[in-house]
Image 1 (cartoon, rainbow, N blue to C red):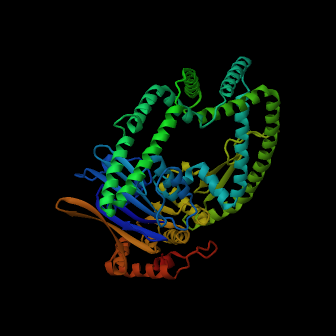
Image 2 (image 1 turned 180 degrees about the horizontal axis):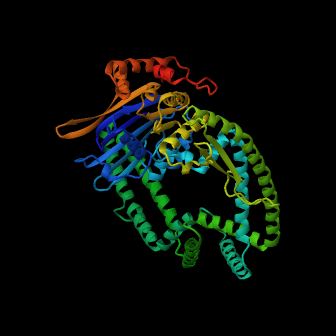
Image 3 (image 1 turned 45 degrees about the horizontal axis):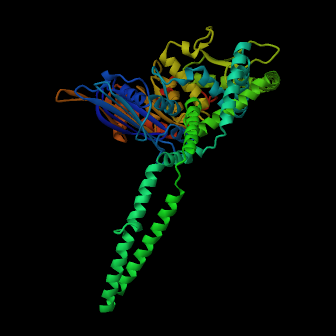
Length: 585
């Protein structure tokens, strides 16, 4: 759920922090007070296009931050964050932030880490659906419609099986494409692979060989200088008259004389003996090291040639010898496949026929299951539409093949099956159903969305639903049903509804009011949570009419909202207009 939405210097908002609650949240206010700013801010946080003209006048930039509580959510947010190198959610909280400046700098952050706009958009599509005259209307997309149909029919396992089989077919086709080439290209490729494999095999590479040879080459190329320095060190240790060992002999005699005079100097004699032993060991070690040094021009040349081979292979096939070895293994595998091209193609063709047959079988099962699910979904959505003012409307789901029907199974256009789905709606008798995207009235479209969402609320994984203008051109009994449906969806998802109708707002568990205030020639949009008398006053304002009567009606709406069952029973009797006036919710 969306827990906090903070807006700073956006349009008429100076600094606003909105703390939202689970379930149904209603947002009301006078026309022009700034309710649409909330939608714009949320869109920004979800990755929509940034418009610098929205920055508050006089400010250098604006910022929007949305915090989502994902504890208990099944959305793959954590794997997505890990794959994109973003910080994980702490205590289940996901924080999305978007900033933009007058100068044109736009930045976005996910859990405090700089992120790409596409990453923000991906998370936004998972987290929020905004329904109304705005974007994020995922139900208009055929792919989303297919997802909802499959979710309603609980067909995800069958879809996953189909998707795995489709991926296998794509792998086979890719392997065939690598083999099906013209003869000249085939010959050239074969010769190149043979040369590459032979060149790498001839080098007899070892992954850790280069480092040791580099060290040996460095010693061999500097052997003369190392020998010169080693001999100088031996002279300094023991061979010269002024060598360290000769000096240590004189120092030892001096210390013995001191010891004869003062027995407390025993420790000095012991230290001298230890130091002398170390110098003798050093002299022996250096002598052996010098003896092993050889000035071997032939070995130096061998090392140089070997390292040159390494550099040549790395220049052609990879940055390291390990990369070269991997390249050689892949080239050898492709070479074997090309040399046995005909039998390999025959094997792939056989595998392809089996996979296509399996796709046809699973795809047929998927299509049949979808057709079984459609009538019940159509019926339930149509029943919900009746309570939303469409008493003689018709909702229909069209399912058509995505590829022409042939005796032989054809590759699917996508990993979702062989079907194209289209949600269609006829609001009036005598009109043919039309695709949802063709509905001209935003109010009609929003109510159709609401009916579908009511039926699919338990299946849809999007945790936050925002409805704007769902109450356009409705009132009375229909407004009551809209409010009840909002509350019903709120049992499964968090709902934010911007509304102008008191019956719709009265059914909300949480009610916010948006106001516009002018102070020192600056206009600012403010927002407050309403409770008790404040909520009654706001509902009375929305109802209009004499103040006392409006307040009484507002209290009736709130009382009725507390007692009306959440679920809407499509079979219950409709209220009369007179009853609605008294108990509209």
